[in-house]
Amino acid sequence: MSGVGLVLGAGGVVGQAYHAGVLAALEHDCGWDPRTAQVIVGTSAGSITGTLLRANVPASELAAWTVRAPLTTEGRVLHQMLGTEIPEFEPFRLMHLLRLAPNLPGWEMLRNVAIRPWNLRPMVAALALLAPGRFDIATRLAMLQEVEGQTWPQRDLWICAVRRSDGRRVVFGRPGSPDVPLHLAIAASCAVPGYFAPVRIDDHTYVDGGAHSPTNAAILRPRALDLVIVVSPMSGPARLPTDLYGASRWHAARVARREVKALRESGTAVVVFRPGRAEQEAIGNNFMARDRVDQIVQEAFLGAGSFAAKPEIRRLLATYGVQRRP
Image (cartoon, rainbow, N blue to C red):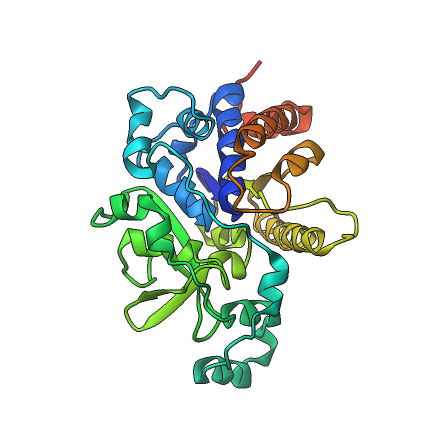
């Protein structure tokens, strides 16, 4: 076993701000550079954060750009790739998605159900088949134009999406997966079902990898890493939910716990950063809101620093070189 893996989960604009705060805390408080991760798994917002890390943008600069603080020379690539302002999106409303009539399943999905009915995940299939959203993600993310034509980074970057025809997860960038342009992989991973239009790549269309899992952490099992750090912006508290948004967070946390368990059973140590009460209040219920990113970065930075300082977490991180030793 060797190396540290980094999993960056889904979460929209607010999730990206949460990534920035947590990663900046790991860099500042623990002395660990997230760019050195042996493999980065990115889903939806995490695919953007992971790509920026692989473009050699420091975590501290990601946080500075998010809160509109001055950037160093290292961080100026952010202005080239993302512009100077966080893009403005219409509010993300879960109730709107529930009102969308799904498309009929294609023959590939029906065949898979007939052959392996035990593999059917109804929620994944339903999300994959939602009526296409009305926004074109390529026109909303300036980053995709900057990344277009760039080759995949040399260090492993695995980007997760869901193929609509059969509801299967596809991990772009992983050996054996379809060879696709980097900007299309990011677009596919970020194409929130029912909000953005699906992304066509060759003969298939794809939607957000978060439709399969908000983190997709378990795909790292075969890598036999020493440690995996999971940043899961969508995970919520363990208590039973009281509304639709709470239910989505509860589901995300449940999926993440299952994946973390699988990693630990394979012999890999795992540390999970998820929003606490203060971070959750800052994040709110609109995943596309940009008016609260400053507060999210601040709360995520403080929350992650406090969590990493716990004796059991500090010892675990120090064991694998992700924490300054006393």
